[in-house]
Image 1: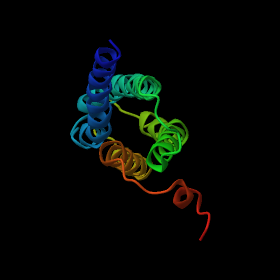
Image 2 (image 1 turned 180 degrees about the horizontal axis):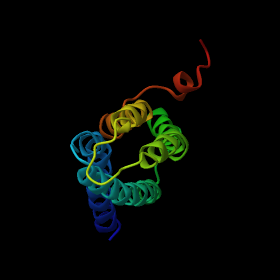
Image 3 (image 1 turned 30 degrees about the vertical axis):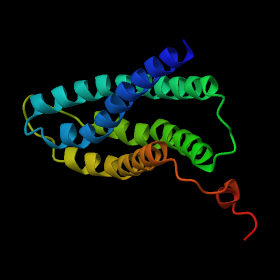
Length: 161
């Protein structure tokens, strides 16, 4: 029974990871493709929906991950696990604080009728710096979760050097 529950959790975790990772790398495409005011409005509405899906998927990922760890009675002294959890929270802070600040600047661009605002791409490019950092964190977390590198916790804490 425990194995069945674990497999269901793993399936939910995997599907949610695909959704979460996919949207993270979809955002630049959605924001750089518009060529008119109408397309920008559509992209910004889509971005709102993507943001909601991303937030929900992050929480589902975290909760299913913890649940699986408790089911397996996993040891918390694994450096890759602790590093992945720290990076996950760093990613959420980056999204909540920095990405949100630049997304608000993109939303503040004045879109008149079907004209393409001159400052739109400037604001989107400013958003790409914190978003790229988030994408990098996602890739590192993904590598840690898949590869589960075996290095001592002391390396993570920089002790005994």
